[in-house]
Length: 218
Length: 218
DNA sequence: GCGAGTGAGTAGACAGCGTCTACTCGATCT
DNA sequence: AGATCGAGTAGACGCTGTCTACTCACTCGC
Image 1 (cartoon, each protein chain N blue to C red):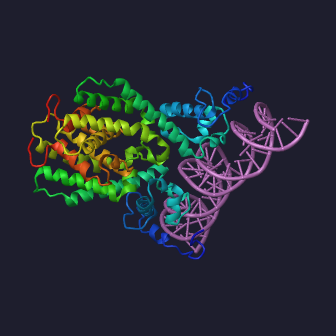
Image 2 (cartoon, chains in turn green, cyan, orange, brown):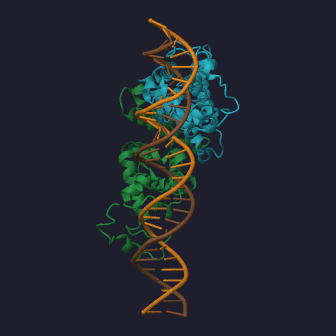
Image 3 (cartoon, each protein chain N blue to C red):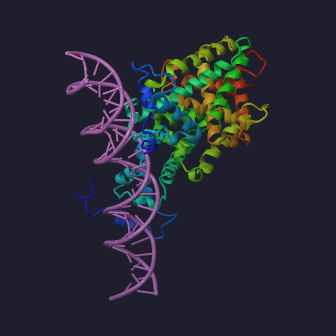
């Protein structure tokens, strides 16, 4: 009951015939599948994860509430597709900021900064990305985005702390710390520790703790 | 649909008349208010936070779906009351395990261990306690339970790292780390770092990072 | 060139949810 | 005894996710 009656010649007809192979294709900016994900990304960034109802997404995409079901058999799968966009964007941000020529310690600090910055600027999306009860863990694309990122962090940690036993454990602990700081930040608990809303002091403390004080090797 | 038809003479009548003062009282193991919270605690521990629907709690308490509304005007307030029980239990566990005669470093380690142990054994409750979108932050009793616990952690951190600028920031960073480790653990991401499901290695790494290696002062 | 088939989206039903409101009923107070 | 009131019931409302029946433009085989 949107523009169905005033614009009977809708354009999603023309879109449909441009991807006859269907399935994996349809990447050319049309197609309901992409539209749903795009709308979902906008919605989660604007209103948070709780706003991502299946029906609301369909409404904003201008289709009936049953339409998404053709592409996403379940609500969780649609949310997972939206979250995957978030992981992709985060990975892109990290890739864009990383300077391979910089010292490992600085690269880790930059990576951590980008991570927390993402958590701050894409708050709703960040929330969604780690609400595992809303996501279909299998379809997340976690393998393609999170894991390489973690692998990079592990390498860098190994460079900064060469003697350490298991760099993966150290990197995991550091990542957990970043994650916890973002969490505390998001629900306003930073005041308890710092009196303000800036995660930077905690980030600095965490980096110093895990990597040694800035400028010192071990 | 529980025992409603086989036990028509329900006992919540007799309970009702024993707390005539009502309101703040009713602590004597009867009373719908306490029953709802108790049922909710059992339910969240058994089935997780997503099982805590208002109607299901009412059902298990043997009352109609509208009954909780008298004591908890909104769903969030009931969940908050349930979560408060979690904070109370966590505080009790910490208090029970703490040895005031031990070295500060060991006390922190013990506290951290109790914290992660709680996250592991009371998984659903821990999840609820930090789902701030499900809780009424004001009514949480956070002031009474979390904050003293954090204050104690801050004191201990100040003792372990006497020269540091702001013990609250260090304590906050450490707490964030614990929290992040619990998170990673809960959604199975520990395998990425350790290959197993045991948070102990990450915990040890985090404690070493924030407090210095075991046995060393600074 | 025309009928069968199909892909894509619609529309309605269903059960469950949180909230609101009207009500019942037993106990208490005067 | 009769009014009052606290406590719980019952039903409605609009929302949700899922399922199913359907419509309808398009395409393909003959």
